[in-house]
Length: 186
Image 1 (cartoon, rainbow, N blue to C red):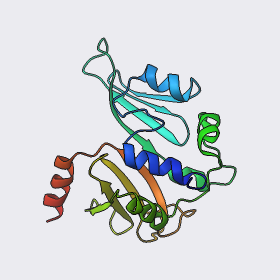
Image 2 (image 1 turned 45 degrees about the vertical axis):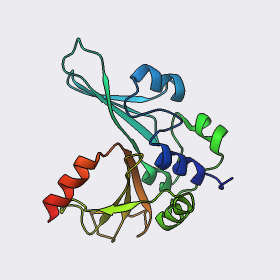
Image 3 (image 1 turned 30 degrees about the vertical axis):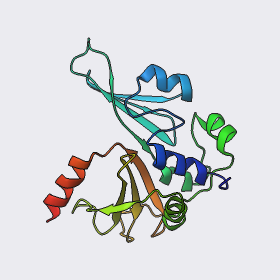
Image 4 (image 1 turned 120 degrees about the vertical axis):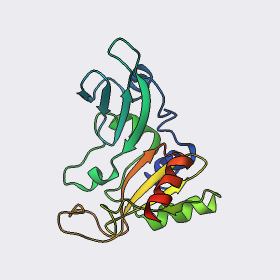
């Protein structure tokens, strides 16, 4: 087995899920797996985020009386590098399955292990506002993106991360969105 948290990150990038949770799963389904201890942010009646520490799930809906529709999830990997870090409310669930989580995730190591499994990560254009400080890599089958620190920039990147550290992992990003990014950058 891959040591520590690497197996977790590899599972997320390979499957496009967090502990089997898809970006489209309902708030009730996410609570069933990750627990009821979360921070909830609502943006009016139509958008909601539940923050479980390491993982965040986002939903939206057409109107207040309509059901929530899953939009995406983000793993805030950079949070683990803070002093006194925890995995958040879902810590017990994650540690029970994957063991200890390291404070930093090195992109080269993750990429190398994924390539051995036949799971490529393709670099896609970064938003001009974030380049060159961040680089984005995409896994086409799972539609997962991995955001990596590309260069240090005061006020542009977290001080507690180094160049080559993973900042976050997010899903989904469709092929159409990737093409839009490519066309925008030229």
